[in-house]
Image (tube, rainbow, N blue to C red; front, side, top):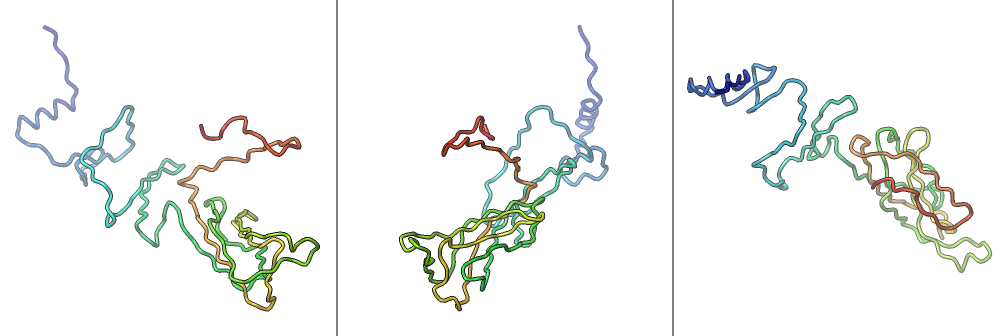
Amino acid sequence: MKSYKAPAAILFLLSLIASGTIFSQVGINTTNPRTTLEVAGDLNISDGMEIGDYGGLKDADTSTFLIQESSNQIKSLNVSNPTGVALAYIQEYVIEDPNLDWVKDFDTGIDATDYMVIVTSASFNQELDLTPNPGAEDNASIPFASAFVSGGTWHLVADYPQAANIDETAMGVWTISTLIFSNDVSKQYGTVPVPMAGNSSASASSPIIN
């Protein structure tokens, strides 16, 4: 009959069962576990991990994410806190009394290294007239608004090309809504050069996401 040497952890567990003593909390590298199992140190899982008995998220619940930073540290992100750090932010800028309908450069001061800014909508509150250039009366103009990086921060530009306020003395107001992503929770790809070779259409040699 073959005999096997049981690992020390199994022998320890069996001894607890035999003595009738089972601890409700287990700690590894800690003598004061705060949960059923607490590991004070690195944890390497080489196979799958199953999580059971979890319920769906309700409106009143706290939404928390775990984020791994480049230093391999894990931090909790509570997105339910209206004044705390979030996965993304929605910010509306109300820009008053620009030069006619033109916002050439508004510096948001948002660090382009840490965040990505996208303009989601833009509107202007003044009645416009097309420019008196020859043929302009046959044209139309739609609002143009965009975010761009300059000097390490995000800037906004807004304009109605080929149009301006009918009343040049009126105080115009641009309302620009932006979506701001943290670079910690989004992946930023580098620049993709696209040689058009004089054509009006082209195709990517390979998709950036497959």
